[in-house]
Length: 223
Ligand SMILES: [Zn+2]
Ligand SMILES: [Zn+2]
Image (cartoon, rainbow, N blue to C red; front, side, top):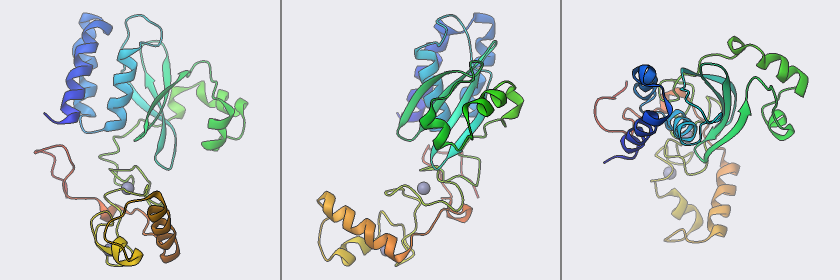
């Protein structure tokens, strides 16, 4: 069984404990809306596993609070409050309630908020943040590593195009040709390759690079 389907099933199961019966149907809609979205599903999984206020609640929608490279700060909007989650392909971290309007300095800086007060001010109204669109449907976000149009992919991203041969960088043989080796074994090899790549100029993400198939089975072919 594929990984995302398994995760959706797991979340659906957690929902049965977390969500009031009469809201269960509505709560489950999010699993349909974001069925191919690893980030949203990771937040759902975290939320329903460790309910922030330890009482019944459910996520109505996601808002995009900030995004930088492949790292997203999402607000999971619930009935009374919204909760901040830092999420990327690396994992998910809870960052408190939006109402508190608090974000630690490192994150403020990372997401280029000018100061704690202006973040607090913005956090006061949920409408200040756009609805989060699934990264799988937003053409300006790499579906694999979540780099935005014009940004470099994460090294190892399957969507990145090789600047030497125009093929898929993780599958073409340029890395072996360039390094003059048969297998890429050590961290040093990888670092050396990353340097050559930088020197050559990496091809940043653009929407034409989107694969025509996502990785989650049939029924989601895109053009
Ligand atoms: Zn990518
Ligand atoms: Zn190549």
